[in-house]
Length: 362
Ligand code: NAI
Ligand code: MG
Image 1: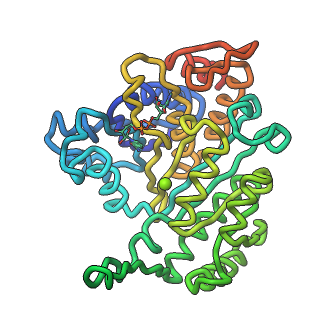
Image 2: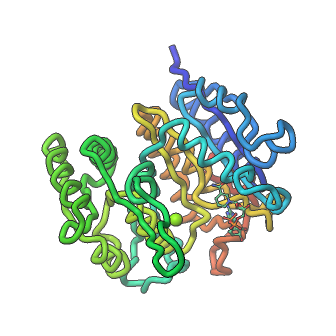
């Protein structure tokens, strides 16, 4: 009997539904090729949910997500909802609660530069020739963004701002497992980032990561101070496979790594909970400036679906097939407007044509 997975499909606003349609077309093909069924359950989220149900994250949407094996998310937001109180706006009112409700503690952001798109990067050609593929794994629910005490104490010039960085052994262990397991599906290298020469959390971080590494003798572990990592990313990004970070370091380094590729709009992301549950979404937003024109680049959404197959459904072969199809289509010169460089051999296409080209290569 064919396997079945339940997918909560939350397309959201702006280009969300347009690029989601292409990701769903790709899943149709995977169903035929890999004897699997994706039971899609559509729900409103973000601005469209505010308009139709009065709230960015309605209870019915939470229920749909809870009944699912994974969430495929588009993007939310737009000028129409910007005058609402911050907590009711599409992003604050939907994304942050979803992360919290589903305990999405591991954020995975690949920074991929495809060999045929190296011209978009700000790095020198010889540094990026042949492309690179880095996966930043960021702890998302602990560290200095959440630990207590925090706040501003006192009055006037006597005021003191306080933030606390706190990590428990179990928080470090679970994110380390995510990194080593991800590395096993890639080049089997983990570089753990810390500041163990200064921070106590980092001393513990390093000790615990070394301990977990013993369970993965096939994965090579190295350590790097965060300031050096920021430098090395620019100097020689190809040295990295999986980069493992606590929350704040990962926030900074994942943006740096993504921008090295010069095409943020093509990058997917995954946010994982304990077990196999996860939420998958493009790194970019709802792009109101081009929404409704059918010209958005669907690749980030399609690669997000690929990550869902890889991390929530253990369908490595299908995920590899999608990633390869995307690479081939780019090699052949298919370009949506955002990555079109007017070079010889490039074919300018719209959203649906890019989706069709990828499907044709599956
Ligand atoms: P954005 O990522 O939506 O757009 C930035 C630029 O990149 C725009 O010029 C846009 O046209 C382009 N772009 C983004 N994705 C693209 C794609 N797939 N194909 C072609 N071009 C693409 O970020 P911006 O403009 O800061 O935010 C717009 C709205 O999106 C805001 O309401 C913001 O709150 C929301 N947003 C939502 C996110 C989410 O749902 N996770 C994340 C970031 C922003
Ligand atoms: Mg950031």
